[in-house]
Image 1 (cartoon, rainbow, N blue to C red):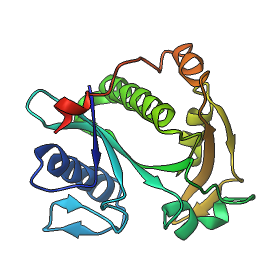
Image 2 (cartoon, one colour):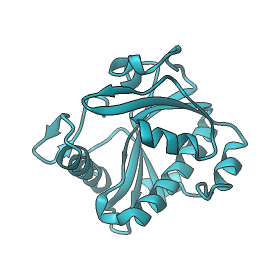
Image 3 (cartoon, rainbow, N blue to C red):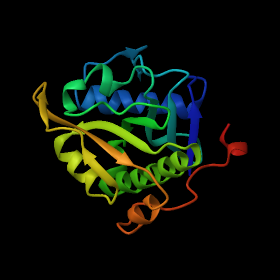
Length: 202
């Protein structure tokens, strides 16, 4: 089941373990030059009250995988850091959210990461449909963008890949509508009912 948290507190074990895993993946393994707090938490300027966190946690509340959704009417990664990846107007608005920081720990193995990823995607789609979000954007490596675009969405690249710091990156947009769950389910990605009810989420 997927927990949805608005904003964060390190007193929450789910969020604290998420930030630790983000540090392990993005800083220790991938070598990103991003802020690390207290030597253990990867927390950047986009983490805050406006960020939405989708977290897969085990029965003890330990992080198994997560993603962050950012509103696009204020600052977000595509507009602030990667505008050159868009050959068109950068998607913005109350109906648009940006997918960032998909974190799938290496310890899960390939099959485990895919299992958690699919549940996070399912929860993200259901959350978007419930909140009137009709478009999701994001920036990933160019090879992974091809995987994302092939999942079954009504989707498109926002521009050609561009090499940044020796990695080819690409931006994308995903359209969300009533047909999205069935389109993703046809490829074995979407499952309904992944979100923990609000009364149990705290």
